Image (cartoon, rainbow, N blue to C red; front, side, top):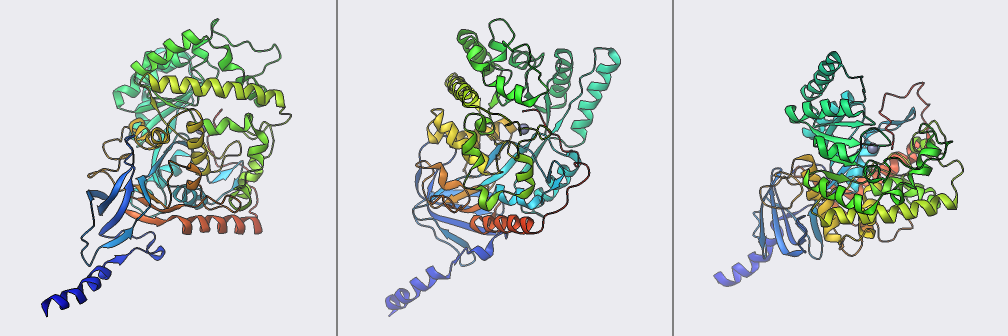
Length: 501
Ligand SMILES: [Zn+2]
């Protein structure tokens, strides 16, 4: 009798565990079990499964082989045939709520990031006061947003004097006191960079350098100990045989058509032997390279970027205005872009990708960030495109996932808490109904005309599961609403830092 009772009861007990449904989006269960999952842990090692991953509160508490033994109170996701990865970290981004004065709802950006599997963002230049408030709200999970790490921009370049040195050091200390996670600087003089970096080290601030064509380049980053080099400028510059790029006499750095056109000739002018030595020195100086491969890609393939299938459902009208060629909008420089320009940029990309691989082979930390909101790049979509481009550069998909999780966490100095799928780590992860190692495009938010898109089911940030397809649907609704009721342009932009890419 007992036996048949048990048989009757057993399937009932199993069904007593409560599966997570889209209506649970945004609510943190006290205990969440993800069963039967194939796990990619971020360390570069291959998938492993089936495993049961258990989250209590906002931490991963265990990853165990075999079937789960849930309590009736547990919430459960059956991940049979699905892949579980660390949440993606967007290593270079800008928090935007407007573009050139055209208003854009903040949740448009944040929901797109979450729908694209992004659970952490390193902001390297935005309206700092506004972003601080958003970071607090995100930390408290009062808004639907990834974790935000804020790098304050220091754009001053004073002349050398004891008074200016004291002011510069004071400014760096103020940035630290204000709660910044790091300091971002660009186009800076040798003197100011030396002072600034020295003070940043004393204050324990991480640093990000966008070199551009300036007095300082990667050799100064090596000398003074910058945490990360953004984009790629400053690296070939430091390997030019004569120390200067062969610009035509008419070149004007301020004019973006010139600047982007001749940037496409930079890598080929670098001396390969000098470049190899430089990459070695960057590795020894523990510098991370954060290349943002996607943000310049329109320069090698303009029509691809202007006709992206994602635009129909996801391009916000403010971005549409901003992206249209206009010398007043940063990055909207395609006034008479030619096939010759694209050929030069394709060559530049091949050399850039080779240098990136060479840097990684020598032991360098390669990061991944999207820098979206400029040059036809949509938030979230830009990061997924960057994954495709790192694959094109020759990295194995497992390495690419490592770069966008663990390597980015190292760049942030947060790799004891973020980046890995391991017990003890914060519960930031994504569940994908498909194998991203076979095709990164499955990570794009669901898009008509891109049949493989929309395969992220859950983005879990800080133990809170967000149903990614529902978020993507809300983003599409925001876009449709804002197109139907366009907001007037503000008289002046709200003080976003438009950086020089
Ligand atoms: Zn940027």
